[in-house]
Image 1 (cartoon, helix red, strand yellow):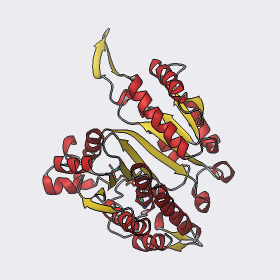
Image 2 (cartoon, helix red, strand yellow; image 1 turned 45 degrees about the vertical axis):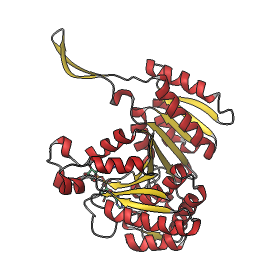
Image 3 (cartoon, helix red, strand yellow; image 1 turned 90 degrees about the vertical axis):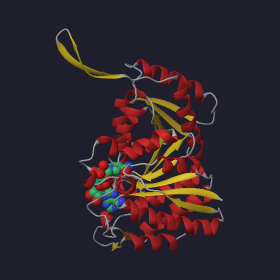
Image 4 (cartoon, protein in one colour; image 1 turned 90 degrees about the horizontal axis):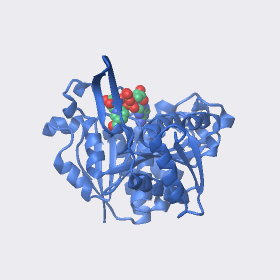
Length: 354
Ligand code: NAD
């Protein structure tokens, strides 16, 4: 049996993870994977029950699992808590505790939703790219100084540090992932200015020698930011450091036109975690109108990357595509002429399409 820990979290997290588990049950029936589920709390929901956004017990259960399916955390109710008790602390606790060193964010433009993209149809039509972001190193974790005075002037500083093993680990993952896709890696850095980027580029070139069937090119981050909106179709897998990946993955996420549809995977040393890119959407929580597709597609990534069940993953992705092609829309992606459905109804339709 393969154990999945489900962490619904707060707000719409409860509704969308329930949908994703129903979909997983259906593919399990079809592909005989042998999935079992165990539930844990995180975020505000955990704080209410246990006085902490993430218990050690929940983290331990995740460490022992084959994969973690996460909804979202956060809500106004907990915004005034001290920082260490806030729901978002659960995410950092899981990242650190599970050693989640890479974040994978696919951006795919569905032909049926192409008009929702803020970019011109002819530019985005057929775009299908994946950003592999280093998640536990670089300037977000390097030494810093909040305030010091030098020559009578206040200053602050942060440090970008990367070691060879850190760059090797993320680069290998990017190349292995590219082999499952269209076989192209674009490494993004700022090697014309930053020393850490020059080491990054050298290590990426070294790792590339072990993957002769994968094409590699390099872009400076400023150019990459432009290319993402000028010609997103040129990209297959983009690999980059923590800060550039943070910015570029948000830029890329709008290309598709709907936040409710975007999945993500955080790959760990022990267990990997899968979640939609959106938050807990307190404004629509409990109304039965949340779009569960981002979470359902995250469950497909769990099948692909943690359980190596590519056919089952593909079955979910195809079912979501057919649901869109047949004109079914949740409120967030609804436009005139289509059929509006709620969370439960769209989940049933996706299940029927598997
Ligand atoms: P959000 O992503 O929750 O919502 C932004 C907007 O998109 C809202 O109008 C919401 O209704 C809509 N939306 C988001 N997901 C949707 C879906 N699946 N279907 C339909 N509509 C959807 O971002 P926010 O409002 O800035 O944050 C709300 C809370 O979520 C905050 O407490 C924030 O800290 C938290 N948050 C959590 C995560 C996470 O758990 N990984 C990520 C981002 C934000």
